[in-house]
Length: 226
Image 1: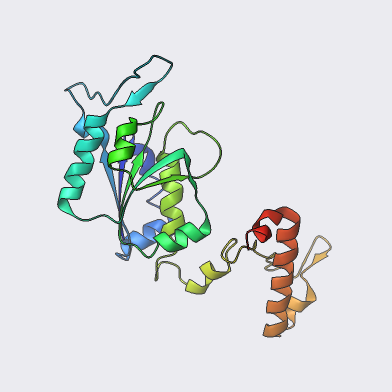
Image 2: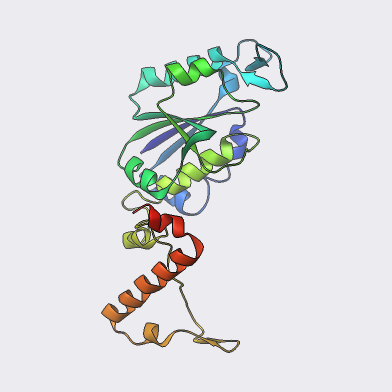
């Protein structure tokens, strides 16, 4: 999988992709993440990529030309499955979306800044708009990092135990059950005996019951979606 991220602040994204699972995915050749500086496509030698908005109002808007020229260059080099814009008014990102997108190959992610991007870019280039939550960030870089992490770990061969992702929260509209490790007793609290029994079927039944109860308590809306 290849993910090309268009950003005003590429240095902000360098660290998240140089550690842990995403670093391992790149080292294995399963994922390629490229950071493209939008200022390389600025309209002048001063690096201008934004301007005042028509109609007045506070905040600058990212201009059409730099974004269009950048995307045109990338699309001239290869085909992309989606051109994604990370924006608070996009479709809420969830596990089902990530599962589906993990079957694709190439993505462009556009990180917004300021008051956002000129609407015409959204009309002409963007194929999918994604939000990571009902709040506003200073820019789309952190949202892009969340996207890459969420999708990267689903690629076959990335996780040491590929079945691990199948038991994550939200995979089946349930939150994950509680998990335990050593010591068996910690400050008077014991690991549930069923987990020490070695009875696989009963353990799985217990975990499903716990996941259901936890979901009913914390996120009943997930059960209503079924």
